[in-house]
Length: 135
Image (cartoon, rainbow, N blue to C red; front, side, top):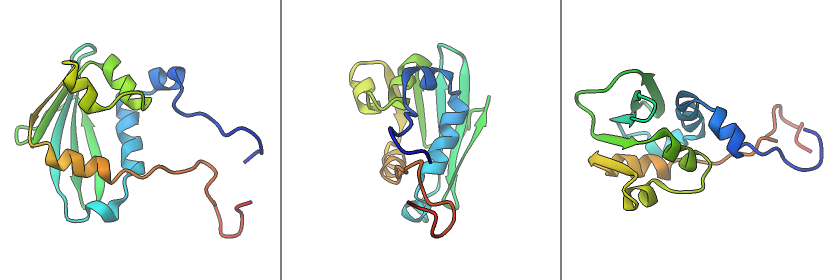
């Protein structure tokens, strides 16, 4: 990695350009699977302003998503506009704040979602690719 200022991944242009599906995959990469080893759940995510729907499943310490589907047996359904989700993606606002403002709804059991969010682990883009390469 070049020395100097670290790259910014959460800027407004990057967030707007990132698809919801890509953001969900990023969450899967950020997940510390050891913290959710015994947890299994399915949730629905809906963004009515752009018509997107996702099924998000956590099982076997892995977070996966399916675009264009909704699960009949979901523990939780989260509904918010994509424009509101962009604030969450940029880490400028939380889901709880959006719910309090009436910009998001959670229908169902929030406990698995809270456990999932607690298992997210930030990582640095300058991680060691091979042993002994970190400077």
